[in-house]
Each structure stands twice: as structure tokens, then as C-alpha cells.
Length: 157
Image (spheres, rainbow, N blue to C red):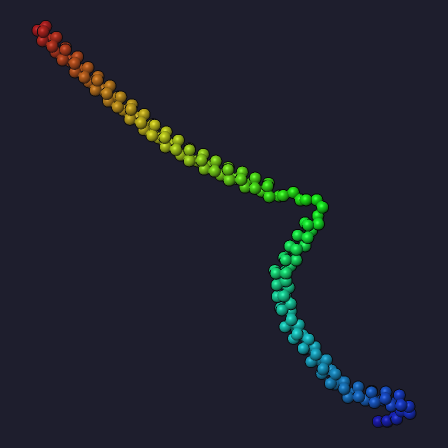
């Protein structure tokens, strides 16, 4: 191995830097590898925490900021917005009235059916009673006619 000695001060500094660089190269490689591992470990550690922080921001801070911006926009809006609650209120009220009407209809239909059953029962009872009275009356008339016929036949004999 031939060793050259530089003649200028700058050459000597350069030669010393090259020698130092050669000696430090393995340690630099080792430091680079260790740093890469540490950066990867830091990324594994930080990723779930950043995601958790993002969800926390979405759930807590973002709605407040959105509400604040919406309120500010409504305050500076030159045209007042129409209330959209009235159509929904009217729709819900209409549905409620319709449901109540349907329930009354069903109840009245059941009452009418029960009334008609009672009326039909009463009518059939009335017809049966009338038929029994008529049968009794006809039996009585037949008995009277028979007794008169017997009496007349006795008088004639």
C-alpha cells in the first residue's frame, strides 16, 4: 500500500476526512439501520393514536365547528330562510288525525256489527214468540171449534 502525503493544508484535511469517513462507514450503516427500525416502531406506535385522535376530532370538535359555522352563516345570510317545520308538522298532524279516524271507524264498525247481531237476535226471538202465540191461538181456536162441534152434535142426536 502506497501512502501519499498531501502537500497543502487543504489536502491534508481532505485526506483526514476521507480516512475518518472510511472508519465511520460501518457505524453510519448501523445507525441508519437502527434509525430505520426506530422510525418504523414509532410509526406502529403513532398510527393508532393518530387514528383515535382523528375519530375524536370528528366526534367532538368537528360537530361544534360545523354548528358554529352554520350559525354564523345564518346570521349573515341576507335572505331569511323559510321554516321547514310547518310542512312536517302538518304531515304528522294529518297522519295522527287519519289514524284516529281509522280507529273510530273500526270501533263504530264493531259496535254496529254487535248491534246488528243483537237486533237479529231480538227479531228472531220476536218472530218465535209471535209464532208460539199464533200456534197457541190456533190450538185454542181448534179446541173451541172442536168443543162447539161436539156440543152441536150432542144437541142433534
